[in-house]
Length: 117
Length: 115
Image (cartoon, rainbow over all chains, first blue to last red):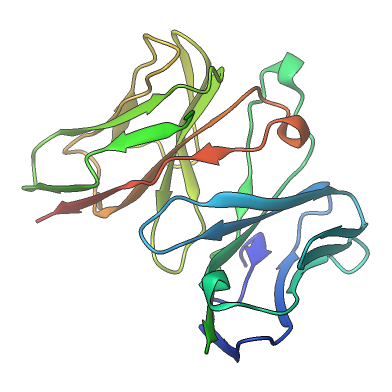
């Protein structure tokens, strides 16, 4: 079983729809949760990150973390064709710079989203 | 504009040849990383470096080598020992190692095809 599970899609929705993207995880030590967006043949770019449980909103995007269920979600409101991309979740336990642990993230496989006109 | 430059965008090599992928950043970040991305798999960490002249193996370092002689540069060599080198390679950097305050910034990748 992978540490982070993410449905690869593809997910196809009409313009204006609300999109829900999800990841589940098994490592209860994860405390930091991120969503990256990756356009075709480009590098991922950070969309949002959250610490521990709760919601975080940024424009049309809302990130939600439920640590009790080990489940995170990204909601996109009023989806646009420009939102068509692959969305990667990523997560990490706390790594201390002082112990030389480095920056280590565990990524999901990504969900391919297509928003159609 | 600050960012990470990976070159070339596409690279083709014959089996048995070593190949070096370039990564340069002008973000003044201390930490740099190499990831590999394959269909159906999450990004996997190959090597990372927190400071100049120091680097550590990631989860899949076998068949790869790196150097960090300058803060701006972190080249990756894919050696002939790497069993399945064809993949999309991503370089990233961050200010420091504590993930909450230093999210990763990625380059646009190099697609390596070995035949």
